[in-house]
Image (tube, rainbow, N blue to C red; front, side):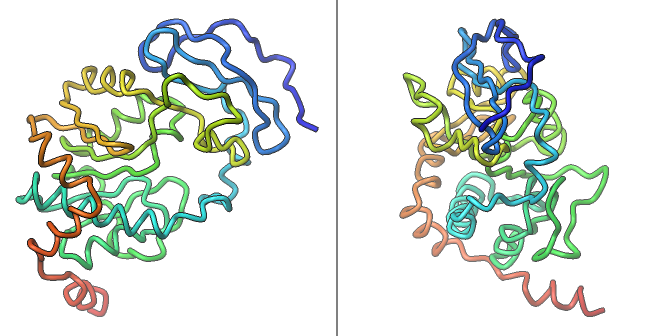
Length: 265
């Protein structure tokens, strides 16, 4: 049976994105034992949980056991990121994967010739050791896949990403309209306790404007840039079938041999 924390109030709270009023949307059993309230902004539609007191428990394992699609997702993200870089950022020198998990995507991207580096607050770097991000550096390009829905403070979290790079490529599924109930959309996934923030297209636009960025969106993929980029090329790059064709046309020398030499010095 779920436990209710008695101090929690169902009164409206301020939206963490636009600051407007958010009202109680519903309750769900988080980690199958905490009865948690979810709030939805009346203005931008952003959804957030009550203050997430359960996060230490939720991150006892950095990768949730329910995340059975992790390898498939990394392979797809590798294709799409490669195509975005090939078509929109061909001069990229160094890139960083923020929230990189165990380093699978970093290794895949380096295998394809892109100089990617690893960063993660919760996971251990198993597959990209030696290529951790360097403090005080900025990067030409940043990826943050399945990160925004984990942020306690979306503005502060996104600010950290924007400080690392002018070009930020993220993935997060936006809330369908009308917003589905808490038991009717798989992305809420309260059983893991890790997803605590849910964005609408409007809330992402507000965040882009706050940081002076342009925004392109295609499905769950969103690109924040300081300079305008072609919406057509972006749509092509984020179509998996087309991305594979693009990447066959823009092959780069792999970094496998150079990385091996660096690790064996």
